[in-house]
Length: 158
Ligand code: DQA
Image (cartoon, rainbow, N blue to C red; front, side, top):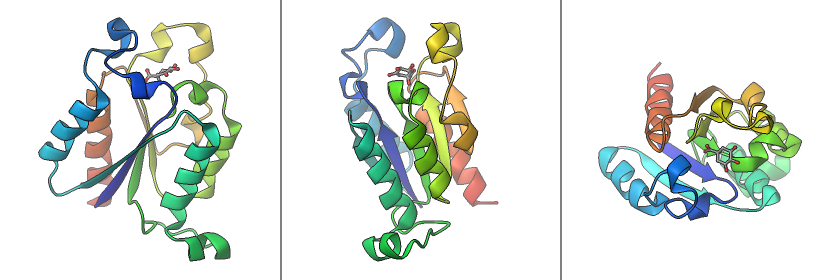
């Protein structure tokens, strides 16, 4: 089982950015623990502050290979990921392009937010990701990524 975690803008600053909201742990440290907890899962990690790079990474994971991408063949379990855990950061609230990219692939995408966005500013209450996502996990801190992996594992085991 291959799972790709994608973190969007400003999430490279976890541990240093507003620790009262996002916690004091870096994602790199957390990722080590996650990989140790799921040795049977190949966990790949991608972070970008650039919207188009996130779109490209979703295409790549969903279509599996350059050839499939060229021929427009979407694989249900795209050669490059069986499931995707996506925290699109602020693009959650703005990006039609990421919404469309999720719709364009068959790989299930679980939307994660570290904070409970519904307890925060009004502009964080709407997500362009949610209608396209296979599931949503909000407000559990970094543990949300683990919960998303659990959900993907259960889905793949039927
Ligand atoms: C976030 C919530 C977003 O509103 C914010 O822009 C982020 C992080 C979260 O994980 O809680 O960058 O996605």
